[in-house]
Length: 459
Image 1 (cartoon, rainbow, N blue to C red):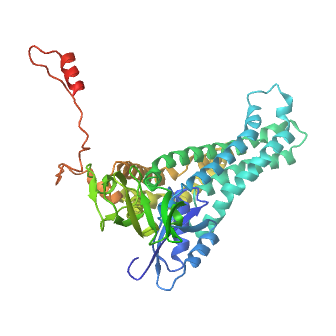
Image 2: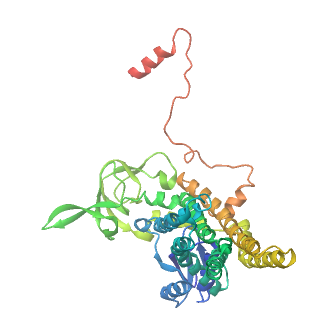
């Protein structure tokens, strides 16, 4: 809880580039919310609500901006990788467009197949791809223009739409004439959509690889528990899901099991591996009255615990939240990239229009080549790399560190860490594993290595 307001987290759907995140930030800020952070890579928004402001208002603002939103918690049980469904949707669109684009594009390499040169066939193959592209990119472009922050989808939509309508106009005007094929660029429109979709697929797969830290941490939390209940003055045990655990439930944890929830030992003694929290390799002795941490491992003994902290109140959920907040923290170089991305699209549109006018009117290049040059400027000038490069690198670094038990407070700390020359540690327990290995054997006179090993193995 932040001073003066409530912190909420939302899962955002429908974002296609980093400028989409900026559009959502602007839409949410208009409601009066403060400290708005929307992360394109994780598809999450973290917002501080003013006193009296309802979450429903934020959800409505996001939906009016053309995106989907739903509440998100830090509970380990709720940490599903929600990016997979979006990635799956992108892949389906890519394969759909590829089916129509391949035969449409092949007419350039197979001129002897007359059916592929047919304008009606080319139009028929292009229309499904164009409609899909317009629904995916055009919708995003429209809402970005509406919000006043044009994104890369504006460039893409202008590019493939110009190629499509130029070809459609040529088909109508020059139908039945030898000049008709000079105005057919249906394959250009379809190829633009398909290649950009391929880029999105690759982008989302690379993003998935950098966001595994949260899911890896979530896997520490066992999804089932053994609950002890009293029935007719007799004890009975039952297997329940993590989300069905209630505060005050008595849980049985056997040797070798992970503790399902934060709690207090009410019966038994055990040795517990808490290295995921403390970093200490040696197990900790616990007895009646001691507190346990959900996700830690019982090395020895059987205990009963009373569940005390669940969901977002658990230690593991707080660790997950810390990692998330660290990944949201922007270093200075990322803020610079975001600033450039915000003005990049209008500049590219201006350059594209300038390319057409200079080509056609000043250099007297024919209309067809002038339009194609203008479209090329729109399509190749994608600003997403600037907005994605730094946050992806930051998340990859913080995620890899989290997997190895190192929690970094954010991108700014990571940026400063590059300047560090010397590190001083206060103890060795967090740097060693406690599992010794023989690295080298040196034999004295009269004893060879095989004899020495035989003696050791016989002990």
